[in-house]
Length: 514
Image (tube, rainbow, N blue to C red; front, side, top):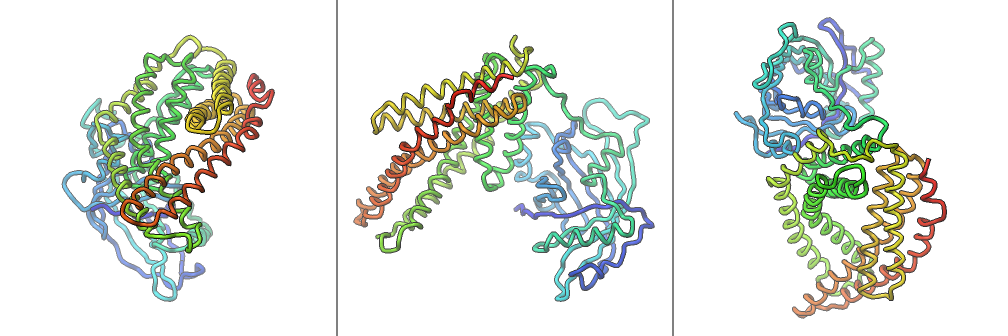
């Protein structure tokens, strides 16, 4: 079973003769305990074209030390990574393979680098004997392993390299400020931070085999380049959020779903730039994926909303096993929704979608407008989507309150998302006018989202009330919650004309033209 550890560390340049200063003088450190030297042997795996290294991921199989096994590291921030560990085995554990699927697809990961290290370890302890951090002086010998596929290495390229580095890693629960204090002490002795983020990155750099960044698609300075840059950003977000969803990280489902929606929206908005014969089928697949993920996300939003409503009620108004019924409902539907989301990510259909998106970037289906001035092309597309939103909002406001108006407001909400995403995609080109429009339209989208959430919650509360009544429980609290959601929807409808007036102010879209 894999386990996750948050790794917070800093690396420093050193030589075999670099003396480590007395760190017992660092504030908070009472003693430095020598733990001896351990021998580590790690083989790093990647695709032949180094896709994992390109995204700063490392996958290794290590023997020696206290944590022998398979380690997969995801970057979180500078000097911070999540290390996912699985027991030592001859082949890559399935759980780790799943976390790599969006990047590796159907390809095989192969050995690319072998690192053998002599690690001289010191423990930094506090006055109570609690471990604060581990400092190690690593003498590393790296060997670039032969490629199994493709052309061989240049005969003049170095395949081995050796270096020494100092690594300081915080123990769990230690204040990160300790790293600053240790670094201050090291710098006074002339010890500087390492230029490489990881041992693998240094090994690849020293052997002349670093991953190559893909070329930007589209002719620079054109509408095609602007739209493709935005498309690439969303595609990268999909690939990045895939393992986060599998790890059940907070907001991961939402972020993956948003990336799908943004990309699909861009395909629709910029049809004059990208050929819809190619983008329409991809858009349908993105709609499918967002729908599969949406079950989990929508359930999460509804659960949080209903729990909050109940928590806000005085205890005297919570009659019957209301919270218990919510917990049972949440647990059952939550498990089902997560299973559905993971099944989608494990499907051949999803991998085919990812391959199709890669193909779009590799050979963009550009139309005539793609070669034109990006300011004019993007401004026209954004204004068109804003006009579409105006039509839907005005239609909804003209209807009497009721189910038909609820549906019309939901359609307006979808149009608001599309208009906002269009403006966001155009921001690098159109600047502040696009940013201002996006902000105003986002306020409309948020208000319409609150209305839709209230409508959905109202239906769920009614269903729960009927179930409670059917088994002889009091339905009083459910009726009260229904009234709260009804009031929330009505409040959103009353506020909409004012918010829309700001988002449709004269000159707002005219300012998009440079």
